[in-house]
Image 1 (cartoon, rainbow, N blue to C red):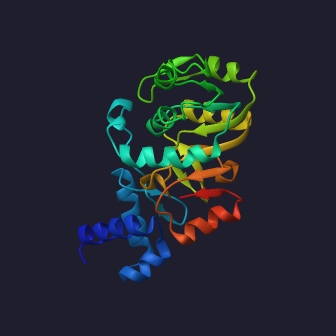
Image 2: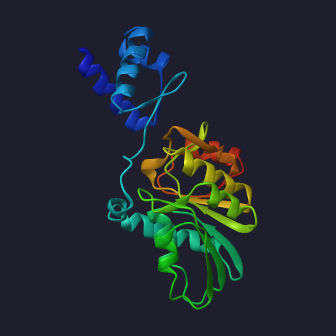
Image 3: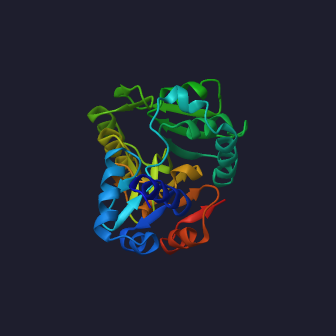
Length: 249
């Protein structure tokens, strides 16, 4: 098998299985582990995979701007949002950060819901502007235009005086072994703070983000209370179950 063919096969295996181990690939492709490691290094350099100690993980969907992401997988995002509604009740204090799935969530909130919603996302605050029974508290900071959220020291300091019943986290990448991660260190710091000031944490995650990893770890996955998602493999579900995470499909 030529190198190009072998590397394409590695990508196909990774897409199907979500995680690959170098020693296992060596046996399956009948080449040395050194050859596999060189392949993984090259694929990582091309931005096609994320190398980890024993092998590699998927990198997840490409990081694109907020406006572009609004047009992607909307039916799935609405479906996840509706599943998450079962966990919401009147008089909750909800902390919601950025993300197009989170935006779909607030757009689909019941018209009779009474709640306080705290957010660092201008689009989410705007979407709630006409809701008389929902108090909206906007957290300031420096606008990170790619994700349309406010970030920075002002954001973190404002969160010091807040305690939320439920934090609804926008997720870029999640892996049950490595944790929840994002490409931006500024977002990681704000999201970590939001986890720490909330009684419970919920994440709505499309399947293309499952078993993927980015550069900056927010927290271990066991910090989640609820994972609302789709198409979870039974073996992966068991890993979340062991961490006492309630998985909603």
